[in-house]
Length: 211
Image (tube, rainbow, N blue to C red; front, side, top):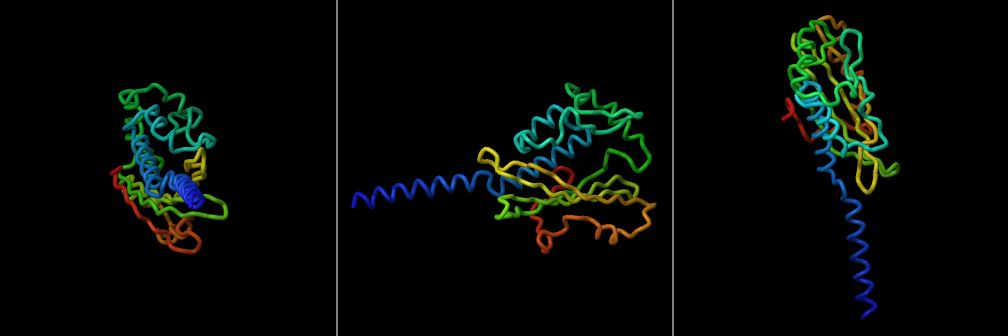
């Protein structure tokens, strides 16, 4: 009887231990991480948060081994000069206004600012063979004047210190304006990450203008 009791207790500990490992960063948390990342991307792109705030807010989401965005990343160009992360360090929202005003004045298709955005985020897809998880997003940036950019992203998650962290982000995009010769339908067919393993992507969350 004692042996059975001891074995039962050991089995419970094993199951609990396994459960903790499997459920660290559950699916809702991973989807929440993508929501956070894309919200911060929108705020940073539109100069509503500082570079320091942006980097701090995504540090826990991105793998320490993934060179995503950092001090050496060139974020945009002004008058032929690349503006990198190290150029933005320590700058306040007030300091960033000069950049925002610069891009507001651009009239060509290379504008950085966009009037609105819509982000759809997929469910979590798990590749058991590779022990890798994927989430996909579909992002529409509206620049106004019949200009828009459509971006599909694939976020790859791998286990790191018993948590799932983003280790890679790939994207496929198209740009549409009044001078685009191909139809929108034809261009959309060229986008990658419209499906997973032959099945249409299942989106479970939508953000509109960061909300």
